[in-house]
Image 1 (cartoon, rainbow, N blue to C red):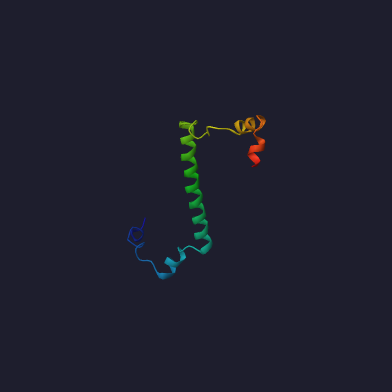
Image 2 (cartoon, rainbow, N blue to C red):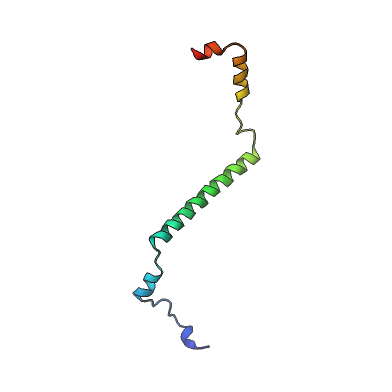
Length: 81
């Protein structure tokens, strides 16, 4: 191997080489979209673990069936008023 490859040539970059590594608008938009999706996925994973650890805290205390039973008892007229 030659000693020229072991030198510090990466620190000396021309303007053309630096501009070759810049991102286009489409790439920046793509990275931003992927970043937002990763944040959303992380929030969903945290929420799912919370539901798995305590599943009954996320359930409502009353159900739709309870409200239907009230209408069967004859309170439908009062619900319209």
